[in-house]
Length: 120
Picture 1 (cartoon, rainbow, N blue to C red):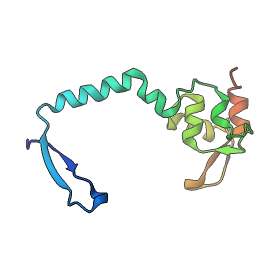
Picture 2 (cartoon, helix red, strand yellow; picture 1 turned 60 degrees about the horizontal axis):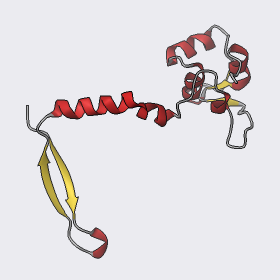
Picture 3 (spheres, rainbow, N blue to C red; picture 1 turned 180 degrees about the vertical axis):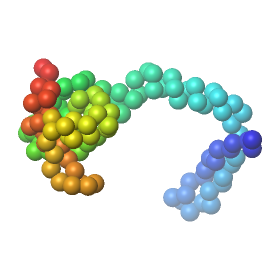
Picture 4 (spheres, one colour; picture 1 turned 90 degrees about the vertical axis):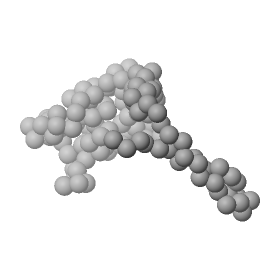
């Protein structure tokens, strides 16, 4: 397996300097992977999605606090805390209503609230 390298740019490009590119080797790729896992376990992933618990209506509201009419599948997944396949099954079974077709299909917020009311 070839040794992985990381490129670092040195120099101030804004001043018209030609940037100097330096190669620094990564001696232990396993250490980099374990560092990434520890960052995820420390809550960085929750910060990424906002750390929203199941049934939190904040996901279904716009910045002014009004409910959206419909939301994308990903937002419905976050609200229900389930996978894409589960959302698809709920739509197929008629439990969740949808609008649009194909790639523009969205889940109606009213059906999400009927299936899982907001938690306070």
